[in-house]
Length: 91
Image (cartoon, rainbow, N blue to C red; front, side, top):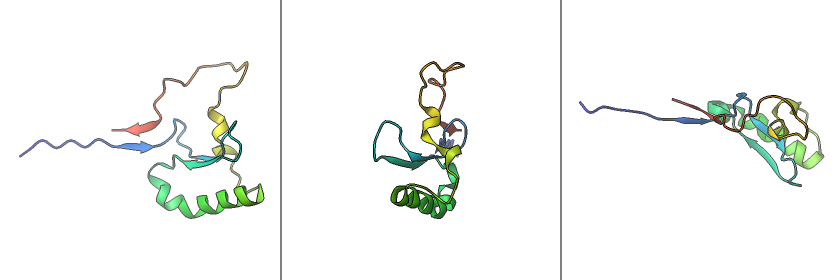
């Protein structure tokens, strides 16, 4: 019997929350990514929320927790840097 090894990488930010919303410093650019293995299940609400955000400027879903800005370096920020932290679940 051959040895079998499986390696997977799930698209998941370190805090396990997806990235949804406008990309800071890139006018007109939006992102909806990092949903981990739940992407197919979250696709309908993600699509609706992002369409509302892009077309109307606001979403009926509160997207603040998913803002890509949470990973932007802030001037004068204190605390540990997450630069060398993995950006996905691996096993």
